[in-house]
Length: 184
Image 1 (cartoon, rainbow, N blue to C red):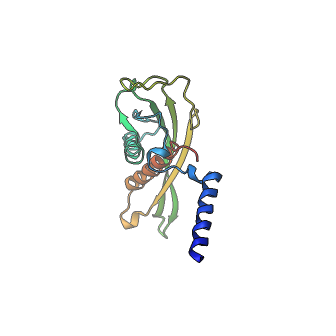
Image 2: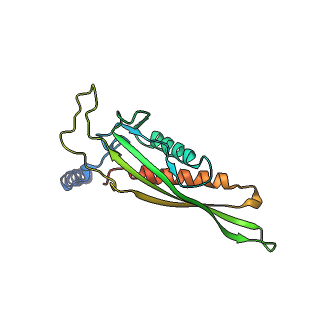
Image 3: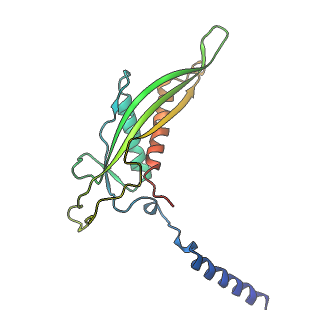
């Protein structure tokens, strides 16, 4: 008798869950991202910094994050891409957080500001019978989106500006790619 009540209560709970929308959960990596995008083109980010190769390192971090975290493929032909990511390193600088008694840097922060813009292409995907019948709606801000990130380092322990910048690039790449996720 107790088991029967338990199973009836379980069945009622399941039916109520299905009716209330709990069955609408999405599973898997593909469900987090738009289905109408398969390819992304990422040109090398523009840079307003005087330091060399920062934009290349940032672009590489973004491409790796897209390839590792999304179902999208980064391609080298902008005419075949469903989505184009334009980016610009607006500024990067160092900021002293702490110094020792002899005015040497104890802790320094590497800061950078990046602007990105996602441009959706309105074209058909060749050979797959897949066509957009209307303009694509953009799930992220169509204007430039800005990111400011910072990562600290301690020179006395052997940490360097280069490693702090790389961590900041990776953090920025995660923020950029997170905007591709569909809202729940």
